[in-house]
Length: 192
Image (cartoon, rainbow, N blue to C red; front, side, top):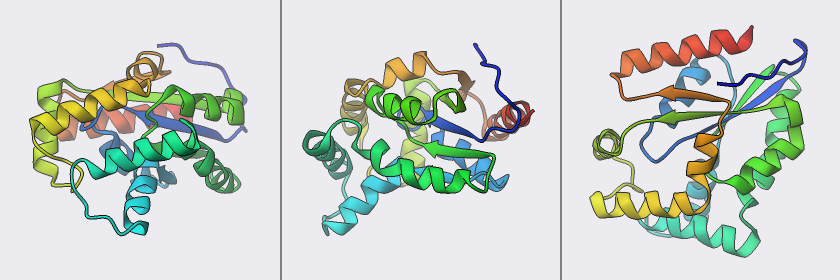
């Protein structure tokens, strides 16, 4: 793990990435509980589905995300989210972006915040991720085939690359209390 040195007075942006079901949302919950503002890229897609008055189903969220990227560019969600992040940086030393999924998004964030930007990957095995997805009950989750289609689509956006190149990695092939402890330990280390 490589860590860049930074001036202690600079606000920082962290984007968490990971394959579907890896634990990005749980990581975001831990940070939110510790007064870190969290902005979700997935919530932007869910809001677009609602705005279009589409029926929620396992495939629709991926279709809308792909349509947005095709129509406005691979970085559309990052571009749309960046001003809101800046707004939070005015009053918070750390802001979390939950759900970075592609290299184009990372480029926008790196250009916007430079040395103030960090990425963190949450990783878990495919079987662990699928089991968690089956238990969480979100409308975008489906059967194993839908899970594999989603994995393939997100890999196509460069997700595996940004996971591999993340500044930090947290393993989530563990029980929830241990994962939450790892998230807290990372946050305390990052704050210092």
